Image (cartoon, rainbow, N blue to C red):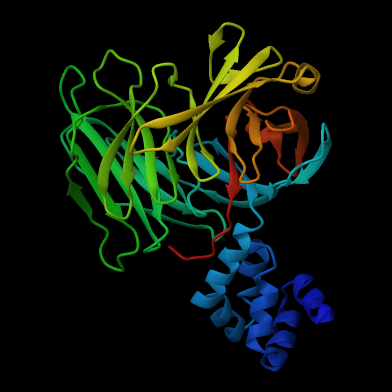
Amino acid sequence: MENLKQQVLDLTISRHDTQSWSSRDHTIPHDILIDIFSRTPSKSIARSRCVSKTWKSILHGPDFTKLFLRRSLSRPRLLFTFIEDESLFFFSSSQPQKPDKNSSLVANADHHTKFSHHVSSGICRSVNGQICTQDRGWRYTVPVICNPSTGESIILPLLELDRIDEKRYFGYDPIDKKFKVLGVSWPACGTRNLYEDHHVLTLETRQQLLWRKIECCSPYYLLYNDGICISGVLYYPAATDTHSEVSMIVCFDVRLETFSFVNKPEELKIGHYSTLINYKGKLGALESKRGIDYDEMVDGSFGFLKLWILVDPEKHIWLMKIYQIPSMWRNVIQKVDVYFAGMTSSGEFLLSPYSPNDPFYVFFYDPEKNTIARVEIQGINLQRFVNRKAYTFVDYTENLKLI
């Protein structure tokens, strides 16, 4: 069994290999092939589909896709995205699990693929292995769904409205296993009014992709913060008027397509650059303070971290935790400006440089142990992405499901 696994893992596709394996693959039971391939990187899967019709059938099958996804969930990765010449570049590396105290590690990044869309900004967080971004056209921007693991992308239909702007959020319903895009837009007028239009597009319809208008139970003002999808619910900040700060969190149930609202504590300051995170299956909000100012970026002068956890959405109950940053923080971070990219499923905060230098480091902060681990990311041609923002995502799951 181990020899067979090694043969598959070391397979290099060539004409000779293809003929050799094509004549022998019928001797390998399908269940063994599925088990072997479910443990291999997604790039190896893509190459192996070319070996024979049998392998192609197995590796495109729903049983293998589900098994691969299930095992990918147990081995989350870091995903790095760069925009260069309006194209998207995706890299991923292994994600250290509970790195040792004050350690310095190395992770090798693999280049997944390049998507040549006219992308300017607006990359949503990875949702079950898929990424939602925007293709900028002459007059409009349209959503694009990308799968870095398969190299696929699909441009969604244009939602033509008499609007001055539109914000899109990307979510996943784990019960019906459907991806959905939520579009929120506001009237085209001189001043920003309350939002009135909400549209949803479902990807797994097997029919023509269409936007559907849905109703919201209460008007609100949308802000430009990013949203996050947790257990089938999309969360994003909002306000009651144009002159106020964030006063509530909009909760959109992806499966039921219904809205609800959670009031935030007055002490919780969610600014333009504040970070919403997945805290062990609950919504969390981070407040980071550098000196006397709250900002997206932190450096060696970073003093403390406030973490707010939404423990009961129906009763609007939040729990606050304050973490004093360890004294050795300044020595590890030095003069690098970093931002919070999220929280891992094992409980560490990931901090990533806004624009990586060479060497490229990311940092894991364990709030319970109050320790810092530095990880060097190798395998990315940083010269190509000088002064480019690094969009870094935690707990990326490789998903071989075809769009």
